[in-house]
Every structure is written in structure tokens, then in C-alpha cells.
Image (cartoon, rainbow, N blue to C red; front, side, top):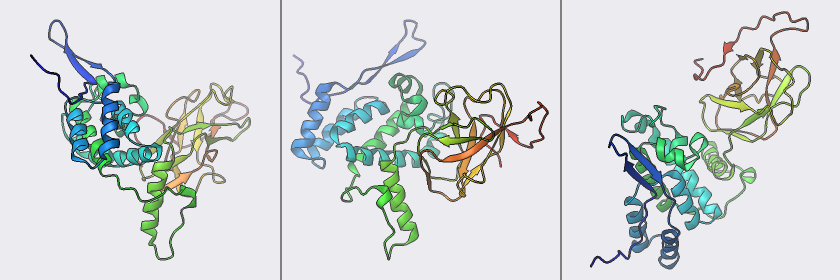
Length: 317
């Protein structure tokens, strides 16, 4: 008689073929609570570095295809809130470093819809925050690599002592500037919630200044696009007009470069492209970073404004 295995197992993603055998359909099942409970008990009783716990964790994860949502659920149970933030930051950094090689691999370069693989895919964020999208869209090999880096980040965690709020971190008397920036950057990555920045305006007259509703942390000199929320401020003040988007010499931070552009009709997505000329930099919530101006004057006469049209393509400047 077959005896059940004493080692708990997981099977979050199951692949089933269609009747004709032409397509394979992925079905996601959340982690069994019994598996998480057993792992947490082994972690508590034997410790993270014990061979028993390490073997149990690896055998469970290696036995199944898991998605980012599963990994976050599991490690949020194994770690306290501060440790979990540290783990997410370490996992994100490892995936960021692994992404270029994944984009060169034909098996991981694009998702099942033909979109280039991104860090959001691997982390299960943004467009791919829904577990069903992670299951159906992300290549299996990419999921496996994301899992390996999640485990590596977990076992590689070394507490550096109590977490100091990033705004209290000061450069040491004998600390080099680069070391200070690295330490500050690591603290901000852990402590600042990564929410997609949204632009709004409370202006009712020109120029219509755009401000952030969430803090923005620019880590690199890459171009980043921000979207606009037309609902938060009520009725948009400039309906049905063509708008020029430019920086604001009074408010735009000196280290932030705004790409001049034109937006036709009402603001929706892809409103503004910007980048940091000397990263990293932190822009607080509420900061005005740009302005929009209608291209037609009071008498509906055109105003000459040499700008680049805003599209989904990354700026080439």
C-alpha cells in the first residue's frame, strides 16, 4: 500500500491540456495552509540555517511551479514585517541584475502575449499583480528563476542591526560619499512603498501645475513615465484641448529633466516622461514637477510650441 509522504508538498500551478491536446491551460491553486504551517513550524523549531528547514523549503518549492504571489505569501509568513521588506528589496535587486540575461534568452525574453519581460513580471507587480495573470502570462522558466532568486535572497539575509528611518541617516565623518549614498539608497528601497506615481493638478488657471500624489524615488538615469489621475481633482480644468507639457523652472527639482511633449485631448495615460540626471534622488509627495499649457491662446489662436509628441515609445534624446 502506498504511504503518504511525511514531507508536505505544494502545487500552486497545475498545467492541464485541452481535449484536443492542442493547448495547455495553467490553473493556479494557492499554497495549502498546512504546508505553510509546517514550514513555519520547522523555521521556528530548527532555525533558518538548519539543514532540515533548508531541505524542506527547497524540496517544497522545487516540486512545483510557483508564481510571485505564492512566494510573497510564503515569505511573509516566515518573516516579520521588517524582515519581509528587507527580503523584498534583496529579491528585487537580484531580479534587476538577472533581467538583462533573461531578455537575451528566447525562452524568457517575452511573455505569452509577446510583451518583453520586465521586472514587474518577475515581482508580480503593476499589470501582473493578479495571480491569474502571473499564471497565464509569465514563462515557466522565468518563474523558476524568480523562485531561485527569492530563495537566494531569503537565505542571504544578514541583519545589519535595527532599521534606521531613511530621513535620519547622516553621512559619517570618515564615510565616503559613495558608501553613504549606497547606505541611504538601500534604506529608501526598503522603507519607501513602491506605488506607481500619479500626477494631479489643483490649478484652475494657467499654468496648470502637476504634482505627485505619491513620493517618487528615481534610482537610475533611465526615462520614467508618470500617469495622471483625472478623478482625484474633480473635473479636469482643460477639456478637449491640446496641451504642451514642460518643466517648471520654479518648482521642478534641478536634478530632474522633463521631456517636453504634446498631449491631444484629455489627459489619460503616458502623460509625462522624466529622468534623474544625477541619480539617485527622492521626490516627496506633493512636489510640483511639471506644468501643462494649452497650445491655443484666449482667442483660440494657435501658439507655436516645438515639442515631441508623447507616445508609448521610450524617448530618444
